[in-house]
Length: 200
Image (cartoon, rainbow, N blue to C red; front, side):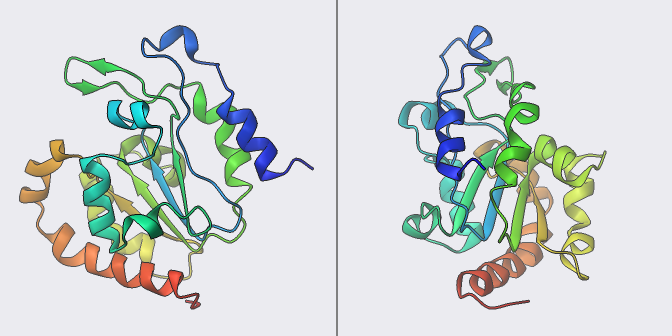
């Protein structure tokens, strides 16, 4: 059976979408089979593409605030796996970054998720990740506003649907104050529990 290191090496060498990426291929993700938290996101932005470090931008600063973790914890792959729906920067369109390339997830996603047997908590960020992980149709607002349905009960791993932490979502956050008032404190509590190695 292929080890996670072998699979990571294959994904890092992927050129599947190269013909469609003006800025070239540079798969950016973080994975270790010991991780207990998964950040299921969209696709790298330009700054992440340039540095090769996931969420190394203002979106990452806000996401770490939401999680209540520092950079050291966030970038510890034995604690957090970070798997965007598209591993390479898709480029910029008229109204921001383009969607994740459609080729990426069918090629790699399930193989990588299969390397994460100990997940206890999944953050499902944005519409593309929510469509994959939750099999839900609807707006991000509709899905995230029903977050208690995903968190409560005996679902394992626990799932938190999230909006993207991009500064582009500042208006959304102002219009939906319940997110930071209600969901974020619960998220931080569950993150502390998982990182402390405590069961549900």
